[in-house]
Image (cartoon, rainbow, N blue to C red; front, side, top):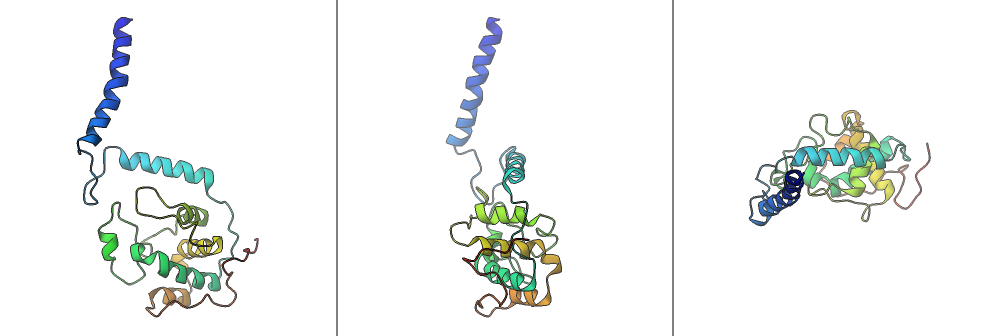
Length: 188
């Protein structure tokens, strides 16, 4: 029994001490060019998926229509394109230097396989230690839903929304019929 207790005490002390030494001596990777720490990706994905399942909205209060896609395109260009890119453009310099790499949302599947509520949660809350900021204090709920719907439907956007994403002209006001910031979105 004494051996068991001694082993337990050593285990309880050695593991935290080893983790502390790993971080305190600079062995942990902190540069964006460094590879991930042991178990980092697995633990981060598990935590993110568990939190999303618990907290992401299940219904979308903004209609998925052309005017909201156009408004979402303006929000995207102003707040997201710097890291996540736009259709037909090369990866941005900022995104090349980030770890983990931000997904290029208009290449491949992007987030079209995610529910709009999942994308909304990520836009509103951000993702810790990735460079993805939370926008809940700088965008309205409507704007966050508009950009979330845009991204959820990126593979089937009308030409007008796709063109709005690639145009380099200054930001235009949201089109007529779009739910405006400060307004309550229509309930489905």
